[in-house]
Image 1: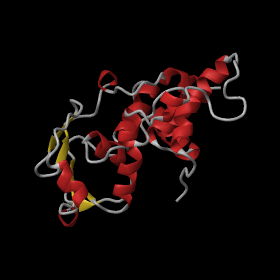
Image 2 (image 1 turned 90 degrees about the horizontal axis):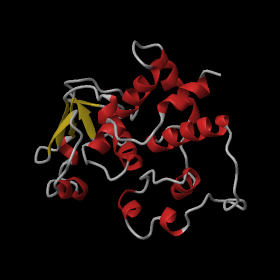
Image 3 (image 1 turned 135 degrees about the horizontal axis):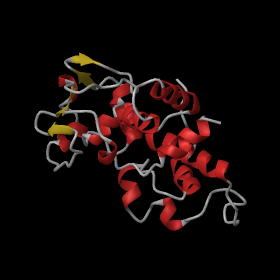
Image 4 (image 1 turned 30 degrees about the horizontal axis):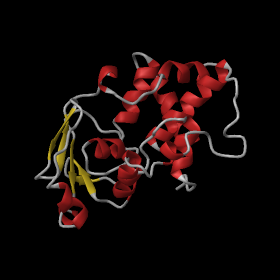
Length: 206
């Protein structure tokens, strides 16, 4: 399976925005964006005038990196979103939010989406009682996501039981049972990811 293997902090610096790819590190003084608030590379500190296309491209790249998708995955998700009823941009964000790896992250069972993707790949979660190890699996309203019983005794998940977790209004969490429920599909107002989805739609509409 293809995946991004370069330094995660370079992505935040390139987008000039925290993408929260490294969990707790992103909130501390070790955050690369706090120390070097300019794009990586030889010309990272140069002043550049950005075209309309450049703005659209950067927004698409930012969305990809927030949710940990590669180009082909993201494009396929956009195509599916464009075929659904409703506003394409909002459909895209809803599909990204309801990916299993993102829901695991939103439930507080992982410190970053990257870690959530790895935990899902390793088969630590069930959806409605069945093991699912596909990060892109799209959960539906009413779905119950839980840590597999064999995994609940690991130090990682024992620590979570001691935590106070705040989750978005479209999901609920039971920390003691290490499970969460998708109450409904998120609305655009409930998605706090700072993405201007209309720019992505404009980019793919060219």
